[in-house]
Length: 361
Image (cartoon, rainbow, N blue to C red):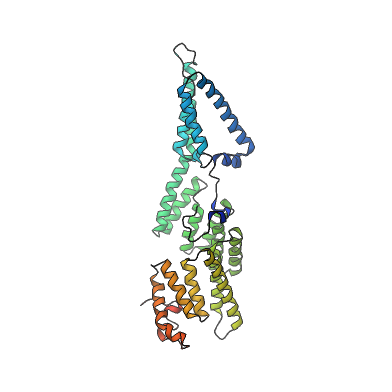
């Protein structure tokens, strides 16, 4: 699921990384248990429907209501996965239990023992069907606590809660990915990379987990491996702006590492690559604040101060709370007339200025 269209394109353009389960119980059974499993379920459903129709022909409104209720849930399962919801599976179990014919006063409707056995079987079925959703519910509690602790910047407790969630279930909420982001933000890049690798194994088409593995390698000094993984993320999701932004950042840092007395051609080629990747990212996400911010740095290094000012202004419009960027934009705006006339930057806009990453006073 994508919650914001400003960073991504249309749903039809997205890769399979954003569809980690089919939202269809029938397809899910087929994928998990094959044709044999789906055939068994369909055979049981056909047997139950045949028995129910016999009772409906005898005038049983109870069976008609039960069949209508379960049929509604069956139709719902085509577009969703009600079998993973605890309340739904308990309801189905009770409906199946009361669908057994109750004993009539003359005993023609079935024996009392059979009715009691059906009730016990319904309770056992309800418990069995509820076990997995109950485990998922507890795991989700751990996951939610971990997510809140992550937002509160409590890395250690967040990882503790997420590990508990992973111990209970395979974590459809991508707890491994969230744990990786917590570890990455805390500076544990190797452990974060292992968490992202575990997330990739659970979501083989997860472009974001591949990209974050590359970011971990970049922080560990493996720039070749980082670039390879960023490109692989783009192969999985061709319109992934964050992957393009990562490649642009690496190209910008390469250009920035070339001394002023060094080879101008190497610096120029790196800046051209950075500009190319940023153009690609902004094509799919025109208001991406980080891409616009980096574009401003690239334009300044290339001597295009007016373009840098416009890029930073758009970035600040997209994310008004970036006070550091606001300070840099004001400093650049003060120096802009002098720079456009071909003059040099003032001391305030020199090596220690916000143009080079200085801090607000």
